[in-house]
Length: 327
Image (cartoon, rainbow, N blue to C red; front, side, top):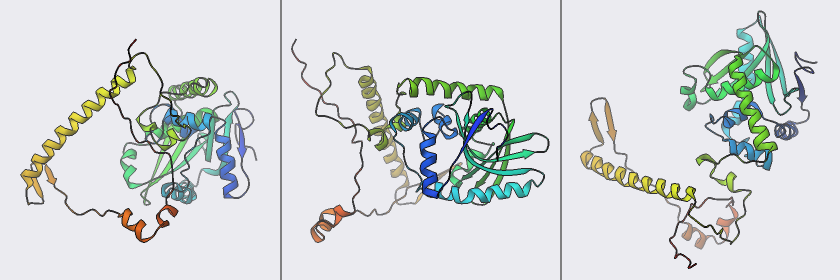
């Protein structure tokens, strides 16, 4: 059954098979365009991703598998529960499961993975987005839908042409909330501009976005195999100079912090902490266990390596002064 806008504003791709087959089909499809969860990263508004990581996914085929994370698992388990709660709260509205990827006809690189749609008797068809959040993310919802989800919703409204989206969220397993986001053409235009620029410049153009602090890690390294060669440069690159300046500043700040921390510990002495007007400072002390690998390998030869998994690791930068070559 076609849904409103399908075939004119967007095409809708549905997936079939068991859970693993559907997951593989969905993963392949999302690499063909920019989805709602990519938008916040592209716009620099995501806690979890960056433009470079989205570029890795779309261009290099490097995607971090998070399907086994508890938050993702329980989000999938609770999605129909939250959807059912929304439907029960609004018996005058029609709620339908979509479970497909909508692709814009005018901008075929713009995709929307739709969970549900809802028909409001006064507003017509809109998008229904289901979310779950842990207690640590509760503050993100204090003033409404977090900005990183607002960009996703604006993207979905752009692709589908719908006038509104309802967001139902379950926080900490017991705090249920609902929000309505009306279509805002300025928001839609801002999201479209960011998505189109990323797709044309970075994906089609093959120009990698600038990397940042979040990009340094195993995923960043996984497609790079270093050689033994050194790259000769005529002068010291600006990036190296800035890194050294930042590292020196960080080291100074660390020494300063450690010095004042020692003085605070001296103030506390043998007590648990100190009470100040509007402030409590505790000195937490205890024991930390350490795995004795050397002894374990001596008593159980070869067993340790059977349980070790290997992955690319960033061991940090090392800068060493060398003699300048004579010209």
